[in-house]
Length: 142
Image (tube, rainbow, N blue to C red):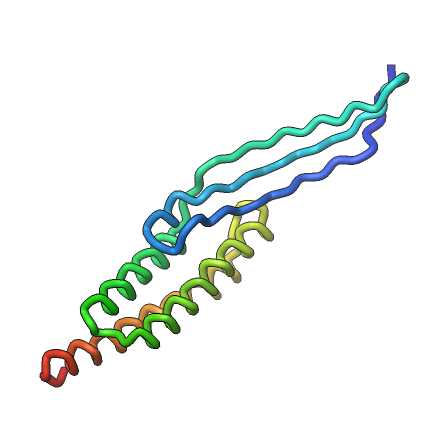
């Protein structure tokens, strides 16, 4: 008996549920579909797997979001500054997910270096703005 594969593909989807600490429990879903032609019929098989994954980049971005929330709640960041920083953080979360999906579960060294540089830049921005806000709110100069 001879079987012929007509189509076969894999789809990888990343689901990041939140920007806060729960982002640490994101998942990756892999769907594999193959169609095989048998003598009297065509059989399509689909297998879907969902597994949790951890990302050091997402852990760092979650910690940055916690700092932004704390800074805004203590008036070390203005609402406008916090919104801008949240938007920057979301862009980096989305970029990490894209790199992860494009690399089929692996972030390349070049993409990792790019993320590392941008996350460091965001962290520096958050720290500087919060330090400035702390000095202003306490009446002291740092």
